[in-house]
Structures are given as C-alpha cells and as structure tokens.
Image (cartoon, rainbow over all chains, first blue to last red):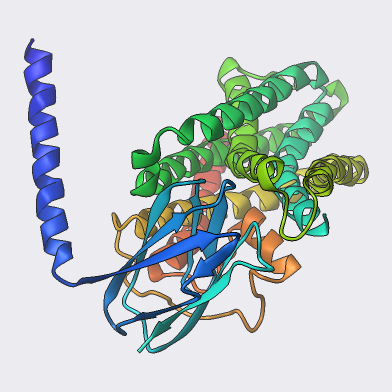
Length: 115
Length: 275
C-alpha cells in the first residue's frame, strides 16, 4: 500500500513535470506536418522560421516502415507503418536542409527550408 | 534489389563486427568452447529484434513521441558500459599474456566476463536488428521503389548473407595476426565503437529534447565525409560518425578517450603495485 502511494506520487510528479515542460516549450515551438505516401514526402519542401525550434510531425501512410534521415539536421527517426513520429528540430540558421527516407532514398526526398 | 541489398548488407556488417571480435578473441585465448555464449547472445538478439519490431506496431503512442529515442539511448548506454568493460578486460588479459602465459594458451574467464560476452553479442546485434527487421518486413509488404517484392526481398536476404560471409572472411585473415597486434587493433576498434555509441546515445536524448545539444551543429564536415556516401554511412554505423554533430555529441565522443585511457592506466598501476 505504501509502495502504491509512493508510486502514485511519482506519477503525479511526472505528470506535473511533463505538463510544465510542455507548456514552457509550447510557447516558442513552431509545428509543421509532413506525410509519407507511396514512398514520397508531401510536401517535399517544408518552410520553417529560422532561429526557432520546430516540431516536425511526420505521418507514414504506407504499409512499410520508413526512416526519416537528415545528416544536415543531424536527425534520424524510424516511422512505423500507419504511425506518426515527432522530430524536434533545433533553431536553424537560414538555409536548405535536405532529408530523405533511408529505405526509399530514390523517391523519398525533401528539404526543410529555414528563412 | 541493389538498394535493399546495400541496406541489409551494411547493417549486417555493423552487427557482425562486434560478434567477429568476440569470437576471434575467445579463439585466441583458447576458449573456443565458449563460442556458444556469443551465439546465444546473437540468437536472443535476433528473436528480440523481431519481437520488438512486431510489438512496436501496436505501441504507437510510445513510438511517435520520444519513447523510441529514450529506448535507443538506454540500449546504447548499456552497450557503452559493456564495451568499456570488454576493452579493460582484454587489455588486462593482453598484459597477462605478455607476462609469459602465452604458452598455456588458456586464460581463465570469470562468470562476470562470460555474462559480458553474451550481453555484448546481444546488444551489438539487437541494435542493428530492429531496423533490419522493420526494413525487410516492409519489403515483404510492398517491395522497394519500382521493383517486384520478390527481387527486393531477395536483395535484402542476400545482403545479410554476404555481410556475414564478408565479416567471416575478414576475421579469417584478421585472426592470423599475432596476439599482441590483434589485441591492439581490436582494442582500438572497440574504443572507437564505444565512443560512437556513447555519442549516439546522447544524440538520441538531444533529439528527444531531454538533453540540450548546446550548439547544433558544432561544425559541418560533410565536405570531407558525408553520411550519404558509402564510406560515410559505414563510418556512421560503426564508429558513430556525424557530419553535423552537436556540441554535446562531439564532446562526449572526445571525452570518452581520456576516460577509458585513464581507467586502463589506473588498472595498470594497480597491477604493477600488486606485482
């Protein structure tokens, strides 16, 4: 019983921290969405605000997994079939940052354009 | 077919390198009877990777948020610790051999170290396995871009087969090295791999927003070596190379070397005093 209350206490503290964390971040994070279909990204070019954090939400509508990969953004993330994944981008200098799908690099290509 | 071949081939080489070092090492110290531990680690890793890839389809909420990164960081953290332990232990044994034990050819292996071997084989294969399973499973469902499912899947499996064969051939040659150069070369390879795993682990925590990258990116070396080139992708997979690392990733990578060298030096002094 005591264990239980302690665990609940941890959960509450965790939830509080999470809520505080999200609200603190929410203020200065831009959100962009991206879809993978037929092994291609749409839109192929994502415009984001320079020097601002961005939350890239990528939805994979294909039946196969895809790996979002970008050396210039220093990010890679597996996106399972039919699921979405959130990719946090740091504040970027103005410029073009290419990304691609590692499993279908011929067709799945795109770029983040910070301006 | 070529595209799918290259992906599974690369993942296999990355995983097989660790397994190859473990097996060659056991062979060299006259403990080939312990091979089964490494094989057990590999078998469990393949099963766990398949189960994990399958189950993760049903745990969408966990993966679309930062669960994927936290999980990867935990695996890599564990891998760094076990790999470091392995390096220290190999270095210690290399010294014993130098001290005249070589003719006995057999070095005692403690329980703890056997456990480390199996864990290392497991982690080395599991790390690459999840991705490979998801990839090959995707091929079964859809095939690669503009090609038949059969060809794509064949390419995927050929990649795994050729990867294993090539690593095996490499260790056939590498295994003929004398003990001392073998320890030295594999020690250096393992230290770079561990540094890469540590930095990659931090990279996942940064991507999850749990650790600040501080300066992102610190530099851009893509003009020297790009991860999109073949050599670059191998360097990324094996040694954790990044062309655009954050300060925390580059820093943890570079700091790993003085730390592990310090541990080795400490161990050396401890034994000189004891002797």
